[in-house]
Length: 475
Image (cartoon, rainbow, N blue to C red; front, side, top):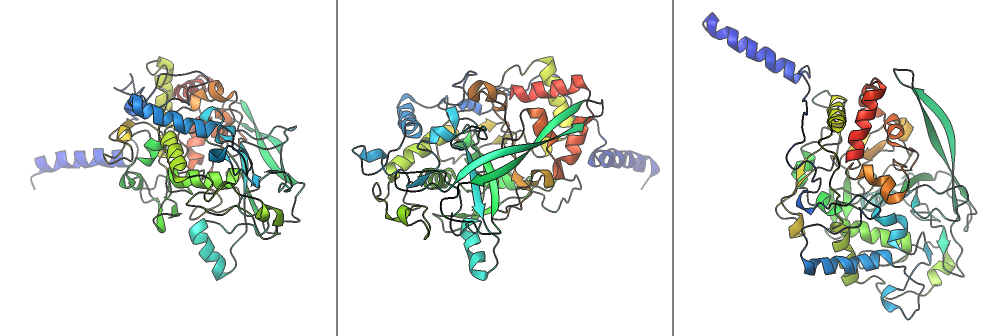
């Protein structure tokens, strides 16, 4: 090959090599992109007050809004003990955590850990399981993801109907520590200490594993369900083949209806495959209500009074009612972003990408054309999640695996709406157990695959950190 032809090719190869090595100049956002404020595409709503997370998809027709209102009614109003004259809403318990969906997902938003003087945990659950030591238990994990604790099953229920003993009481304590940033600033962190007291049915298995989890926001769930599976798997890199330190992988979970293992999308460890199954498991675990998917109360052999209690029908939640809740949960809209053209917010976005937070908090997807609801189809959305599992390091480990997820792995939580947490819920407690009291604390808990990104944020000066937080609060 002539030398004059070789030189351009060598230069082109050098440019490509630099690009592949990550040495190219980071993308710089100087203005908002078209449609950037519409995090949920045409389903997005213009609301930023305490009702911001409770709005129907903006593109629902008037008739479909009536269907949304029906689901809203069953989501908000309490269930009662059977037998009762309120036959459409009886069957609560015998063991439960709350009597209404809204009590956990407060204003359709984020839960919080119990306060020191709280009677019940309400919007925080404690999941229970034991290690699998037999072939039979390994088969249980295939369908349930865990082996439930023998006496108390898979979730501690701290409330009960009259005549039935609650399973126990949940208390949270904290150990304080601090981390220092590059500029000498310090962040105080609190590590939670979980205590289960007043056990109603004797001691737990000595190897019981516990996972405290606050209720996540309900917005945009239908859009996440509508993202095509290949688009999610395209971001998976379980062997870190590109060497960027990020090795997201999908959870593989059991689909109760299809009777096989499929991609997990919902829950803190992506332990549920779809919203209908997520809702059915919440009815069963949180309120002691049966559905056609889960036809028995969550009572163990040791809980005799629970087993003998009357029910509210078979099932207690009809398929029609379950469908109403499903429609409602699919169509809780994502609020539009604020201040997307603000210079500080744009600076914060550049820093977000510079720190490579977007490696896990993937900004953009387009929902599938065959989405379960037509309003959710073909939507350009910005959830800032890849819906994959990532190892977040020992600091965030709950010491409890779930399906394919290890104790240190968590699904990347969506960031849309995170800046409205204070407006909707009156607090800013983040992460799976609410330990972080603000966004900077949440970042400081990142480890494992996110350690490098965290250290880049720690290297920012005070003005840069303020810009990054302004960007996050604009979401």
